[in-house]
Length: 245
Image 1 (cartoon, helix red, strand yellow):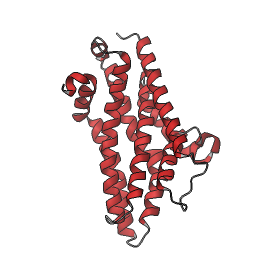
Image 2 (cartoon, rainbow, N blue to C red):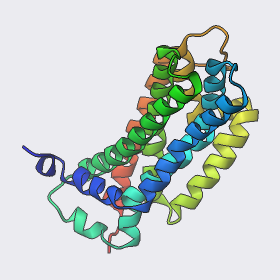
Image 3 (cartoon, rainbow, N blue to C red):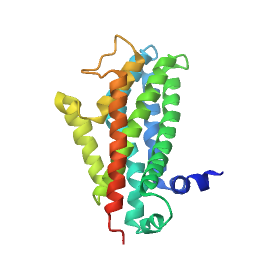
Image 4 (cartoon, rainbow, N blue to C red):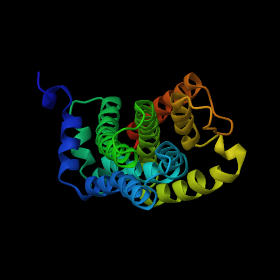
């Protein structure tokens, strides 16, 4: 059975993303680390690529670039349907609300994760000259995937709760994830970035790389999984309660 019949909402959303400007913006975000890597190689040919990649993920990618990029597609997945008043045509289909939410989430997470996977592989190649550690690449990809899943579910929920979800998401990322979580330990433990960073650090398994109050890999994974499930469940509940014109 084709994907158009097994997952019609997923297929429809992927087609919408393919022709949209939002996907191009996500691709630009995903390409930003490659630019940083090129600058690193040009300015310091003998620099430590592993240290550069570690700092790039912990200080720039996880707290800022990744959530902003994920925000774009996650809020577009249902936000555009609501703004264009086309959501009614989707909910009239014989598809459960929970399935609709899950397929929208998978579509946005899949496109975002794919864009960053390509961008991070290119970043790793440029920064290390193609001879870097495979463990580093694996940690980068895993930490990014964890962040995409958690941020994606959270922002999908936000798009159903507030009318200006993109603006609210940008404020949340810049103030909570990028600023407050960087300097206030209590807030850091409540930020998605910390769990994604913990996944990265634990998989990297390098004694020289330290993250304050880093969770064990199993704990970080469980927390992120609970966050994703809870956000999707709340989004489903919200969609059922919405008065769709």
